[in-house]
Length: 178
Image (cartoon, rainbow, N blue to C red; front, side, top):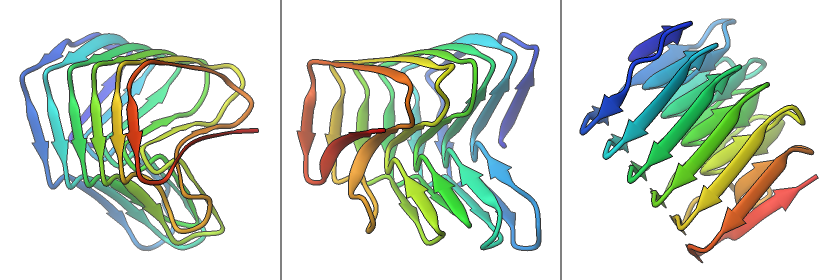
């Protein structure tokens, strides 16, 4: 990750994250091409995430081309996510991946052409909220063309509590809740 936060609480404001790449072709997982939060609390606002990628071996997990979260409380507000991706054996969340025990609010953000590719388990072209221990509220966001070739969904929820309020969605299907 461009920035790894472990028990840290930095506020990220007015930043651009461009072309960050986790590239692990051998046998390592890769999460959070730009930002990785573990046991942290923060606000990310007015930032742009463009062309960030997690690219790992075909049998490993890749998640959150732009941001990956674990055990964290995060608010993401007024940010733009463009062409971020995850590519691995299991590709999860082209822009944002939430692993476990997160409380996340995503407000007034734009997701454009984020995607997951390859792999046997691919979900959440823009956002993948994989764990039932998460809480995620998405408010007044725009999703355009984010998805994947398998399920064609922008938001994937794996048994979690995801609430989508307002906003617009163009292109692929908005959500798959399982």
